[in-house]
Image 1 (tube, rainbow, N blue to C red):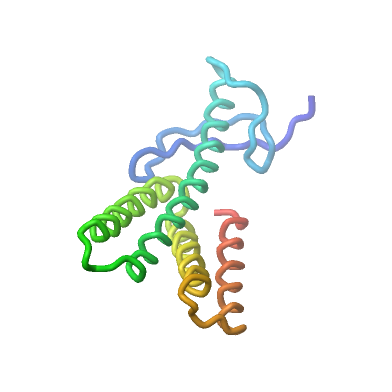
Image 2 (cartoon, helix red, strand yellow):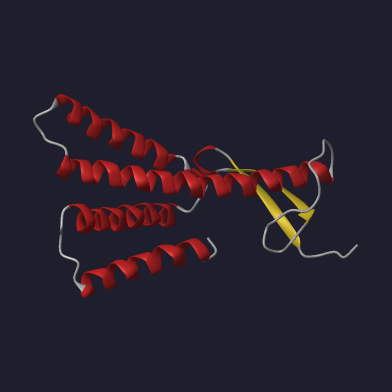
Length: 160
């Protein structure tokens, strides 16, 4: 069995405090090998897998939060201010959006999380405005959207 570099599994608790650290043999990129167990190395592997899965889930929740941001931002323009239902939809979608944002920001770096969230929202709202409201789609505007997209992808791919 080939030994590869050690991976440190850090369990982060409420408000970013480090609760404990465990070490296990694994892949240098942070993906753990082995099956979850109940003692010793198995527990460390389980904690590593849990950390990897939580990070993946955090990214998925962040994408959903960005989509919800698009809905309430478009709703400000599209839904009539005259109806009480539209007011409730806007208000509730903002609350859901902020709640969804609060989940991944606990696991991922705050700057990256917020930047990706805003990037998804701004790209989505701009594209929705171009498609649905006939807003200007100049090449320069589309190029700027492309730069935002490159920045969001870069933040995702770079290590924290």
